[in-house]
Length: 108
Image 1 (tube, rainbow, N blue to C red):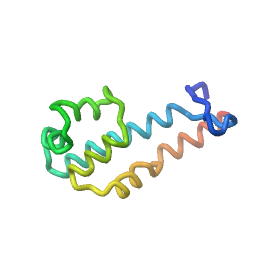
Image 2: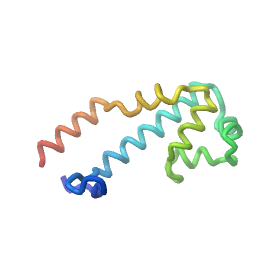
Image 3: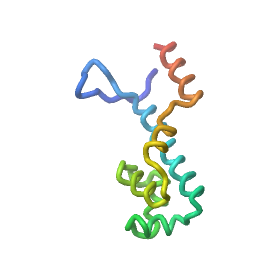
């Protein structure tokens, strides 16, 4: 499919589907936003607990600042959520992602 790909440095025969990675990062961002809402904490309180400046979390969640593992773990710790459980849920492919994979394979 004509999507953007990157060469996997460890295995040059493999390429990385950038669109798929972007979808997963967006899914993690959305899951983090839901987890914060479920915790009952305000974004300001999460920022305070993480030692971030005011408005920083909004920029991370909006994608204006790249989401890092440190961001995810810090915000989860601030809300009291379990990282392993959160990540397992976020990284499990949804039905729509599995369908997109099948379509990509079909079109190749």
